[in-house]
Image 1 (tube, rainbow over the protein chains, first blue to last red):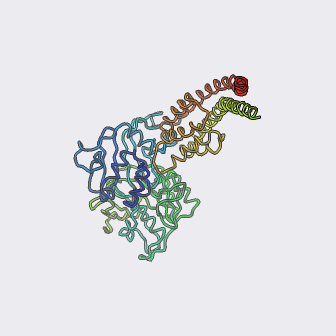
Image 2: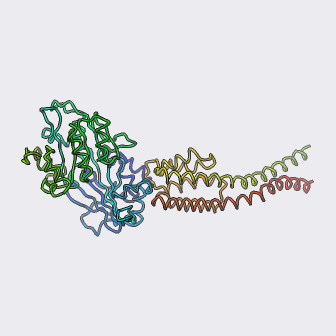
Amino acid sequence: MNGADFINCRANRNSVWVGNEILPVLPVNIRYMISALPGPILDSVEEIRIRQGKPLVLGLSLGDIFVSQEGKPTRQAVEAYHVTAVDMENLIDLISGSSLYALEEELRTGFITLPGGHRAGITGRAVLDGGKVRTLKNLSCCNLRVSREVAGAASGLLPHIVNKRNGGIYHTILVSPPRCGKTTILRDIIRQISSGVPDLLYPGLTVGLVDERSEIAGCYKGVPQRDVGIRTDVLDGCPKAEGMMMLLRSMGPQVIAADEIGRREDVDAMEEVLNAGVKILLTAHGSSLAELAERPVLSRLIRSKMIERYVILGRSRGAGTVENIVDGKTFRAVGVRK
Amino acid sequence: MIKLLGAAMVVASSGIGGMTMAGRYSRRPRELKSLGYALQMLETEISYGANHMKVALEQVADRCDQAVAPLFGRAAAELSSAAGITAAAAWENSLCAYYRESALNSQDLIILRSLGSSLGISDRADQIKHLNLAMEQIKSENAKAEDEAARNVKLWNHLGFLGGLLIVLILY
């Protein structure tokens, strides 16, 4: 039985693994170990951490576990399979589609987006050029983050960001630390506001999505592989600041969405959009509004009171928990729908 | 009459044997030349197109000489399969199948095998270095192959028929 047969025979176990998205990028031996894990564990895998010379770790929604050579979950690091240099070489080769030369920009940013919107974070030795990172070499650690499409993940949140008076949405920023379901919630909000929500008598809006890292729509050759709604135009792989302006000029969106803003040029472009009568839907890293306000670029935006809703996400009841929703003008909580 | 027919058959078969050997000597430089051009295309796909290896191999297979196209086409097909194999493994599998059908010798195989082990695993500059090295080696092998062809093609063509005639004369 070769690698492909193995994947196919497990095809009905779990949607993320079926699309042949994650398993094919793992070296054959690790592929077998992961495939041999019990279904409930596979279902809750959020990330696979592969570090050279260190135990193979799975990040689950309820904490980390190690994987033994026989593909059994264990809490003891000594029983775990230890990743070898050959595993690491094969992993990088497979993740890059044997095209590391074509991914210099991705290596500079430290991650590679895989088909289906999954993300492989990579670290190694940085190669500098004029004080800036040119690329990475001696790659030794990889974090494969599993992207999941959860239809309805944002249903509870939607009534708080839909503006019933004008049929639009509030200018909204989803704020959360990594691994709290920010991208999953954003994708579902985009899907629902784009396709419309019959329960809310919401007809649907034209959404322009700047998917810089191909994580939200998971585009393949420019066509979204994830459901991002019927009225969504996706600008794939484009820098956010430039993409927002391009969409504004060319596609006549009612809402512009993007993931993980934080650079000065992102905020500059966002202000252009805000003043052009288009609603924005964005995400940013942070665990609270106070923390967000500590970031110089974003504090300017918060002080300007142009954003109408800050949705704070956390993991208190699992990934994607809405911890708080704050009105951007009064900075008061407007209620939490969990 | 039967003797005459037998003699003709001996001369013909010996002649064909000689031509086959001569054909092998004349095919190798042609294949090496085509291979050199194909690797040059691959270098362009990698350095300027920055195309992914699968696409680069497909493009080369579509555009290169038919004599060497199967090597690139099969490697691209293996990379496209759901098996999740590396470019080195796909190249090796394709090379094994191609080598059996080609006129290449063991030295050529070593060059191509060595190139395969480095395909796609480093940055652009490094990939270009590996491809250039392989192209230089193939060029050198091609020069040798042309010399050999010049010496051996005529030799084997004549040797086949003359050898056949010699056998006939001895048997008579």
